[in-house]
Length: 280
Ligand code: PAF
Image 1 (cartoon, rainbow, N blue to C red):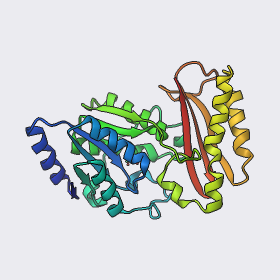
Image 2 (cartoon, rainbow, N blue to C red):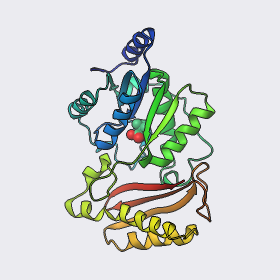
Image 3 (cartoon, helix red, strand yellow):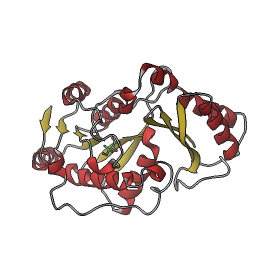
Image 4 (tube, rainbow, N blue to C red):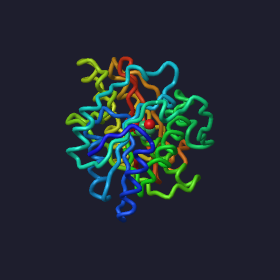
């Protein structure tokens, strides 16, 4: 497995694979890889001849008051995970390689990005779409793998791929959880011991919502209220949002009877965590 830092090196590798008729899978990440990322890489390795993993903490998707400088990084650890999983190439560019000094072109989306996480992170999806579009151009994969934990991101990327005619398949992969139910996230490392215990309230509250749906409840406000009440029972938790939205349009729904995303964002102390379930 190679680690390269330049766009040219990625293109040279991928060109050689293409000349041999090999298929290419791509897993974009911001590094500090955990079992959630590992599951994406495993799937990519199973479905493609070669797999590229990008490790790039993308400054453009962080707001001014967000955790860019503090975002955890460990390339050696990431490389070990990628190698063990069978990835072929890590692309680890410096910010200057991705954004030259007079960079001024962006991918903006009018729909899907204003609600949920977009409400408190108004420039986030512009940064995500721009970097992912660039990475898609650089790697030119057959398939790209994204986790359902960032469900809004998955919906946004699918929409961008359709709007801009990227010639690739976006593969959504299930949420990977800790034993107690907490969704795996690089940001879990910010949690103190007490906060880590409290963070289990996210998945527990979603299970409470799902139990209501299983019992036949369809009113979105009733389900969201139950989730909200459960989260509020944890003193260290502060809700950013609890919402039920149409899984295609991400517009709020009143009734949970089609493909619906029930998504939450919750501060545990200073750390903002997200989780969700999709009702088909
Ligand atoms: O999900 C992430 O880690 C990032 O948003 C992504 C897709 C790698 C873009 O920087």
